[in-house]
Image (cartoon, rainbow, N blue to C red):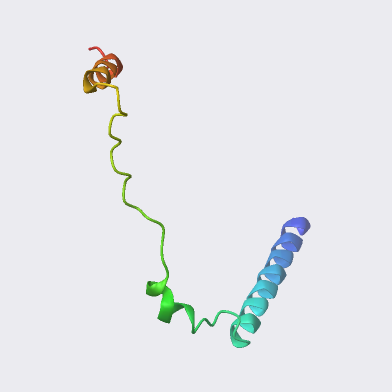
Length: 76
């Protein structure tokens, strides 16, 4: 039973230490960011559009691609 009380006290001290560290960092301005929100919309983000479909290479007929599509379809 003594070990349970010891572990609870240690965990409370550890939690208090993290709380003090967080409050000190917040007071010192560690989490302030005045620049990014104003210009975030100006940054280029990743292109989320799908790539355009590929056209068949020269010299190959479209029927070859249709045959490949038929081969890949699952049979029920």
